[in-house]
Length: 116
Length: 112
Image (tube, rainbow over all chains, first blue to last red; front, side, top):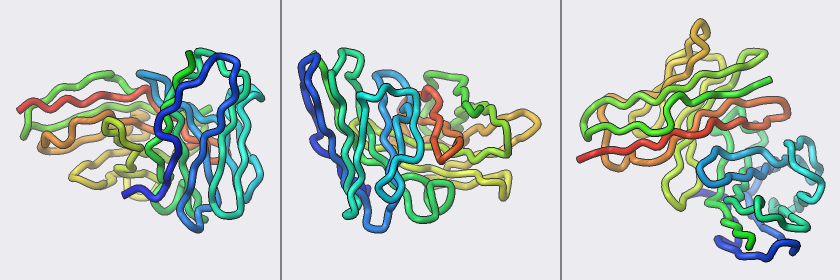
């Protein structure tokens, strides 16, 4: 059973609105990454946080932002939602060994966001 | 730059027959490669990983993959498919700052 929990599981928003997605990682997992998986595609890297600071970002505009908290939870915020933001958003965490060691990333089941 | 190409978007096999899911990679340095599986409405689960140790990597549920540098390939295989293997499979290469680059996925259908 996955140790990463995401909420909500499904969400419908209107274009132009703002949304906050939440993720609770396994204790001790101090690296968290967020991915966007559009329908029929592989996940795309949005950004990564390590010890509460962003340390890597993919090709996503600044209206995608995040936070990581000391209790191993994190948030993905998206402002000014666009129709193309409709996707499954995945949170992934890894142990202090990093995702290249141990067991890679542990992924949550995702939040399916629909923008209408 | 790092990237992976999954050569088949859909693969269909009969239960009990071998599975082959193909993946080619591109990396400017010695890559770390992974295979993940995604069942419907589930998160991604790690099947196996290659990080420059043995070239033949064994994973969970009877899957294995062979790293072939000369062919820049990391194909996923299983000797005998089960119905429960039906899912989408992603080949992944690790990039800078632990960014993971996913392929476009291969949907595996297992026929009874």
